[in-house]
Image (cartoon, rainbow, N blue to C red; front, top):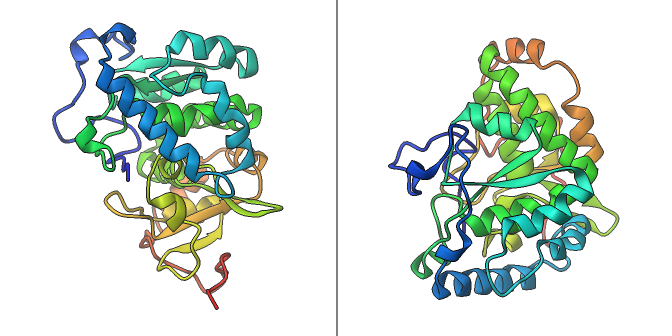
Length: 287
């Protein structure tokens, strides 16, 4: 299971990547020639495992866009993905050495550039990695950037992040990213499906998050409620917020969050496994 210790920003542990080669905005060349045969094999095996798990569980929008990553048997070149991605939604991916600070992270998103970590986990980390690597970022995040509405939501989130830094709302806004971009679920005609990258790139949470009867909650997304809710960084999630469409995400971030941040200062945060009296569990209990 791939777990990100933070949504964005520098981790408290020593950075894993080589930051000496990064520019002022933390981007760097991908250096595709540096990947070893073992690196490419790890990517291939991860891709095969995750893609085999997703039919009937991942959102159709994600499954339809997954082939846009191109090759499956070795790590793709970013410039080749960008040729297709820019034509589709005017986005591009940029290489970064690892987790980056808030300002460059938000700035990149606001300018329709998605930061992708350029190193890959070791074979020993195949099932669990503490920081996001190239497989998590490419496989989990990039396909939905081919979806115009979701891509616009990510840009709006970046713009909102830059504003939140001035308003003291970073902790709250981080929860929105976590519960949507990383661990979001979407309601479809076929049932609840996955669109969050943290689940899509995980070996175990793909099935767990849609299994009725677990201790986790599955509730409809409400922005204020989401911004109040703590999340888990070292285990499967105890709350999954469910949207009805990507348009809902985009529209939900349209209002000015300034009064919301002020309101939240006077409200208690909610534990990750909270179910409020007015809320309904969306996945039925097993019979």
